[in-house]
Each structure stands twice: as C-alpha cells, then as structure tokens.
Amino acid sequence: MKTKKSSVLYIFFILITVSACRLPLKQTIKRPVYKPESKELYDAIVHMDSIWEDSYNHCKMDIQDQIISEDIEFFHDQGGVIKSKAQLMAAYKNNICGKVTRELMKGSIEVYPIKDYGAVEMGYHRFHSITDTSPNSKFARFVHVWKKENGNWKITRVISLH
Image (cartoon, rainbow, N blue to C red; front, side, top):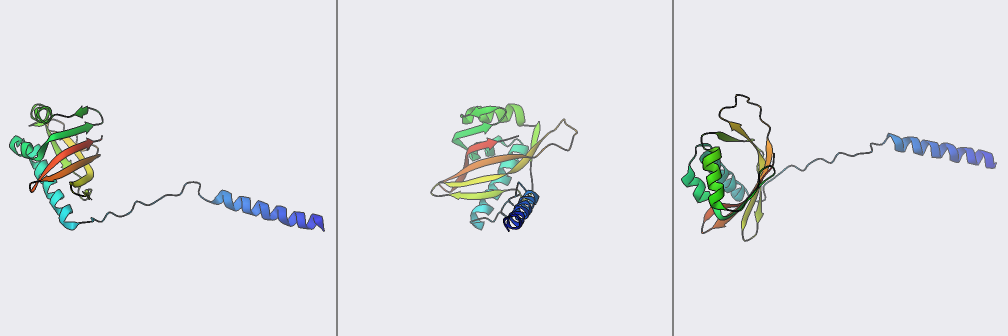
C-alpha cells in the first residue's frame, strides 16, 4: 500500500515540477497607456515645447532667452552639467545655431503636473547635424521641468540622455 501511495505522490511531484518548468521565468509587464492628468496642462507644455524647438532649430536666441530660466540646470549624460544660463546660451549659440536641429518623436510627450510649481515633460527626440547626410539618427529620452512664473513658462531643469 505504501508503494502505491508513494508512486502516486512521486508522479504528482513530477507533474508539478514539469508544469512549473514550462511557466515563463520572466513575465513581461506592459507599460500603461499614457493619459494626461490635465489636457489643458498637456496642451500648454506641448505648445511650449514647439516654441522651444522652433527657437532651437532657427537660432532664435531671444526666444531661448525668454524660455530658459535664470536658475537652469542642464544635465547631459555625455557632456556633464551646466548650471549657468549664460554658459548654456553660449553653448547654444556656438555649438547649435546653424549646425544642429531637433526633431521631436510625434506622440512621445508625457506631461505630469508639479503642484504649486509647474510640470514635468518627458519624451523622445533626436538631433540632426546640418552637414550629416545620414537621416537615421537615434531617438533619445529627454526630461524638461517647466515652472510657471507670472503667467510665463520657463524651463528650469533639463535631463538629456543619448
């Protein structure tokens, strides 16, 4: 009797073990679909991003000056940190104007409110050198922190990843 009971338990154990081995070890978690918390805020930041991009792509330094906050902090994974508006503006003027353009990945922007401050914008963009004929540069993640001051939006923090 014990051998029959032992055999059944042994077979049961084998079946459970084989079934467990067939389960995926790594489950894929799907990223939730983004939906803006505030459509009004989303639209405002997307609009500001388009103004910023146009000024970046067309060397409109006066617009850049209006959008960039005095207390800017610009974090670049390859270039380091810039904590001076004057230094950032000089870098744009000397290294970007007439040399590089930005392209936003359509539909990639996400905007999240920051209570009593402004918003965080995240998305993907890529840059094209005007002299580079290769159309396939890689999209990269960016984060902009926007502050609303006296009714005007200013970028206070940038994280640029490549």
